[in-house]
Image (cartoon, rainbow, N blue to C red; front, side, top):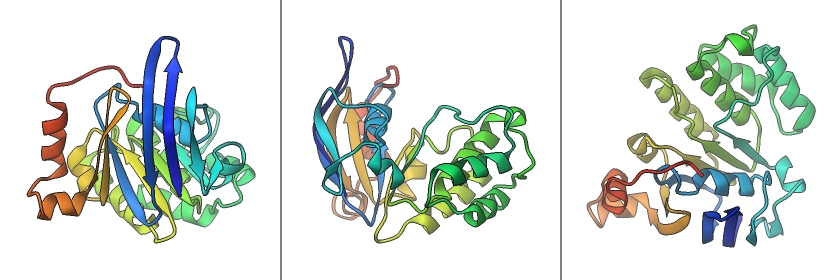
Length: 235
């Protein structure tokens, strides 16, 4: 469904994504893993059509991603993107205007599940409440592809469980879901495939169940093996 062909993205002299080639198939939940600076966010933004590769290309259903593919790809960024004057009800109306696949009923159900009121003002939301609101409005779209960048940031343990349930409920055989997170154990409980990036390069793709049953290795163990004590700045 999504195919990355030798994709590179430069920011001046810095290489954020470096010759990444991979095919992501529908019916799967992918965990995109790597330390800060590995290129996860940059790759997602290119797949969402928000920025263009310096070289290479990303295809959605055989066509280069761009304005048309945005109608089928729902992307949740790490940055806040609602206006402060909005209420959460206004956020839903905003999405209704832009996306034909948006469901107000689904949005209301997710807000209730996350214990958020539609009357709440964006400017009053805590970081955790904002994170839950972004997830709710993104999953309220009946998209073909969902991409959630750090969906568990600022989320308490109980709320994480509710979010994981919502993500699993959204997953369907004809959909593709991609998530990035530093909370590797949380990802392992949801995803069935893992993508490891380092310094903008694809290091490994893995079937999580195969790693567990045949290699006796959890994704958290593999993460520690690959990255050790690496750090960096998000790309």
